[in-house]
Length: 342
Length: 255
Image 1 (cartoon, rainbow over the protein chains, first blue to last red):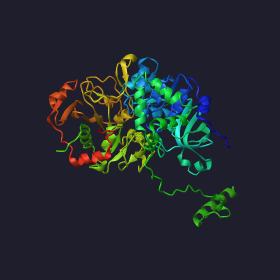
Image 2 (cartoon, rainbow over the protein chains, first blue to last red):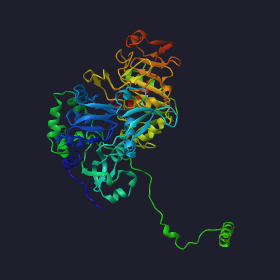
Image 3 (spheres, helix red, strand yellow):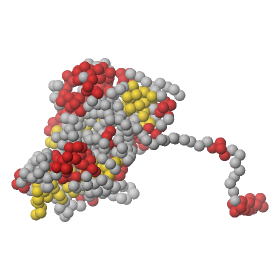
Image 4 (cartoon, each protein chain N blue to C red):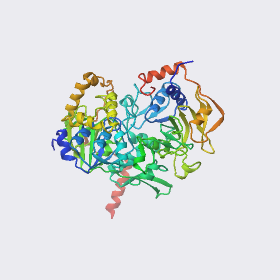
């Protein structure tokens, strides 16, 4: 099969994200799907529910501030560089946002339960806290049916669609990510019902991905759309490509802080840019190429082990007689004689 | 005496709570600086865990700003992800859970969710939320917290229990089946606190140079008990400060 799933950011969001969807929001403190965040805002999607474990640089704050999200399930939402989730705070105060709190491993476990296709999963945390009290939708305490005592259980989270940012993807939809591997992206993505939209720094050939399949976190059959999108996580980091843009995160955060200012940020940086390339062009115009040059990572961390995923051809056994010895042969001959005797 | 910042005193004092060879799970913020410092000073055999999933025998090559900072993955021993590090917590293999917080009560219950009245949305100010702090403090053998202090932060009752300390007192953690031992030490912006083995109540063990017991008590909403052996915290040495500033040269966390 060679179904090409590459498409524009605009088409991917228009085609695969619908009003009222539950969306797995990828990344953690790095690899936040910012280009997808902006496009969802541009297309004025409404009444979304988001599930994720932790998310930084104010991406989800923008999505809530722009009025796209009505419910969030989360462990931690921040723009760490202004030390608050301002738009989320306001939306909650105004009664426009339901927030369901859980711990990081609670959230990851909810996504793992979704990944596993089971309705809930036991975990050690959250017991004894107010998260349990105020988030009965996701958390309960039960008696362990095997008799070890009380245990917290978390409800499985299965998003309708997952949005993630990765370093590489091929046209078929195989996703190669070495960002925060094993945080939640593979579980959130694989547990989604309809599938995954991925933005990738680079598009590579399927044979390149197949040469190192240990790095594939989402196999092609689960992928809905592949968007080639350099800088797609900016201002968060994309490991090996660019670092965290602290100054821009602070700049954006200072807009998030004030209800009157945020619309101006959205007008200039989101609605005013037709796509992510236009956003990056605006960045260079406003803050200079030097701002982006500063984000170049320290490289030189390539794997040093020469790994060869070799296989063995069983054809080599053709014509090779069975291994045996006198003891085994005598025993087997005796059994055969007995059977023959009957 | 060396010239030092308050954050530097806090970081160096906090690092002393880490013993060589321990498995330390570090949350975001100053804990990342503390473990980096401990690893290159008195605890070279420490094992560093983070939520991003890096497991390290060595300090990262640069300052880690986030818990999934690319610097944490460069030269790590394993990077299997949050699943691996949190699973180790649940198996009871983490010696020290090292967290921050916004509010704390005398039993070491910590709030990092928000302040006000949650049931009245217009009267509630949301913070970030638990992150991994809850998981870490539930199952870590020891819990070390670093946080700012004033009478609105050291309170009688936290506005929201995000992270369990000893809850309502002795025996409550055990009743709920928690495998971790609960809080052991709190390093604030004014002093250092330990917990009474019997009552599980937090008491003042050290005050920083320039602080007084009276001032510290005035910045704590409950009737704070003071150790009969209370003493002034030893300030960091010039060498310690030099190492620390090498870890965070721009003062991102140290200020």
